[in-house]
Image (cartoon, rainbow, N blue to C red; front, side, top):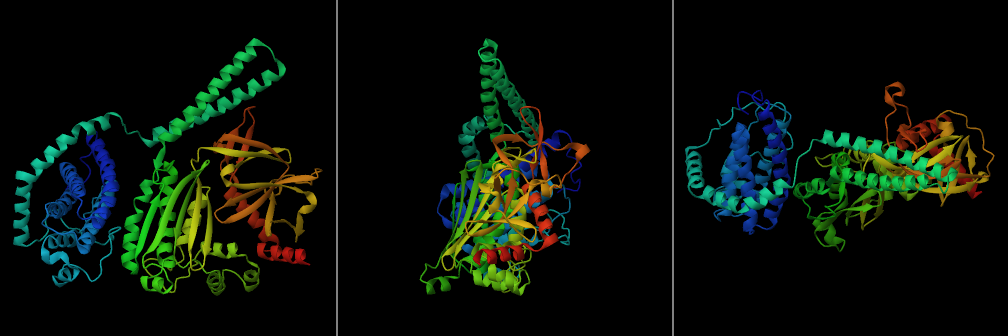
Length: 626
């Protein structure tokens, strides 16, 4: 950044800077995968030109805005790419390592622009490395180390340490030969290469202009406001439908009632279509997240000394923007675990009769109002005995608890805070925070995570998430005269049972459901309202799940499935534990929407007041056996 910092970016210039950030991020999203393609297919000439044009665009636009460091690095990076596309440099593994590192620094520089951080980065090392690989002697890592320009071990740059000394832009100490080479390249660009680029751009201009005419950038805040208005419209539609129903009951045969029914039907149809259209404007393809994974697997393969192939399916699957932003960390942690703990080294795989190269498959697909993301590997799988032993060693469970746990319960221990089976702490894993982050983030998104694993064959982790968090499908239930909405994305099943099927162990209710002991909770009991026993012989149990936890909620009756709009409780009521918000029904009645995650925590606290969950479920199992 120039000495002026960002003070000169006001008014129209501020808009230009914001546009630059958005457009450059879009360029980077395509540039990362393209660099990976270049490493796998160095002969693709069109790919060479596409990558060169991308970096050249970054250089030109950053130069126009006075972002000196980004311009300088992009210029040297462009020189390397120019030699590759002209056939003067061979694409080698080491050259790709350096280019990936340079790309990471470019991303960090853009992040600093986005956060308005004026502190300059030290670019000497990465620029010297780029200059070195433009020669035949720079094709090997050993040569660069011998030149004293590269540290013993280099990892991709993620963020720059805060204590990096500030270096004035465009004042790097380069040799006379390098400066001469830069001058020659610059002239070459001005005299020949840039003319070629202008011709290419001119050929592509009509297509780009056509694309620009059919797209428009809209502030996310405006989309949020539009979504809120659609929510109000949905509430109005529900109210109109309720009035129409009552009018049909009391004034059947009246012509006005028929007109009202037709109008209500038309409003219902248009509202539904408008709702879907607005939701689609907030949808982003999951490719935005998936595109970052190949680079991650490449770097992990190098770091772990393993051969790993990544396959991705369903990149076109769309999710709400707010959810897309939250699933990146869980996916990264799961992928790192699969690469480190799952896939074996080539030597181990050969001994087991497998091919040397391991495989990780990431899939995304729609399942009703949910999206399911699965991450599978063909590695050694998760050994339940090893998990159990580690959990005992770390004091996560007791021996008595371990003896009674099912395989699924044991596998779910990997989500416990601080739990890790790594023999030693490394840069990849071993600190016991990865899967805990997965659970926390998925729970926050009202999602569910399941694990399937076979020792020696591999593991699969499936994440199920709602498509949107603004307008949801809810299951309406009654409990002690009150109506509640349970988010349908957390409902696994509904079971109808007799009162005598519910057993009590140490004052807490449980039920046997398909050879498992399911803890139960009553809405009235958890919310400390009147929870006297009901006279009805039958009760309904709504089985809900969040992350790896399951709970049965006892309700009196079911009213059916409805589309509900989540509304805040307002400043007067504020935040109520266990309640996600409220919604207005067609008859104008306000009902509460359950926050399944908080409700489960409240139920867990009440269990701990009496006795641990493991103890009473174990005792109940013993009673059943006897």
